[in-house]
Length: 231
Image (cartoon, rainbow, N blue to C red; front, side, top):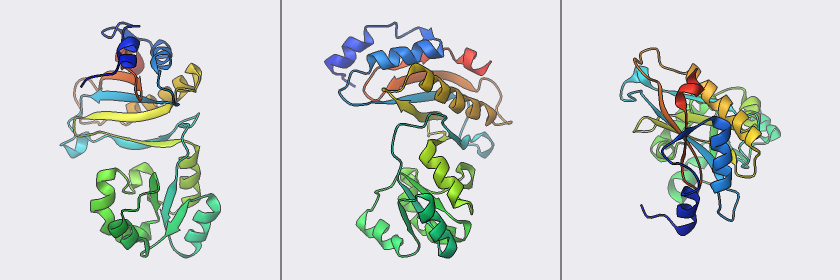
């Protein structure tokens, strides 16, 4: 992949082969985020898991103490009292069966997270092929299949993010924006990595967190000393 001039200049300002302490790495990410918009700061964690085995899957959610810096739009599948509760809690969209054709036929995806009450999962299940590939399918482990829609919505709006392995057994997560202070990013990073460390599969033998890289949307990756994070 060919990178632009700004990226190449930014990459020259530090040793790309070295590993850094968390605060130092995040400071470098902020300094090398040179795009003219508020770039997202992301964490990429390569694990020693083999996600092909069910007992080595890693999936969960965590509320970042300083939020993500992004306005998150929430769609809730609910009926009756729960529909009313979701609207009062600040859901952007609430509905039931009537949303199926809108999503399937009109490609309606003006939301970032989908929450559903358990009784609505038979309806939402019909959207699995559409929502699944986009990572939008509600899941009990992520707290998005729940009767407590108020808590789910408030947590998501406050900065709750989901983490899970991709096909290469890497976890990719946002932890804030370039405009955040190093301290805010560091607090969010710690909340995320603490949650992931707690979610270590019992079946995994060997190293869990093999490498950790932080980067802004358009900037170069900075390596973090993974052994210091896990100890």
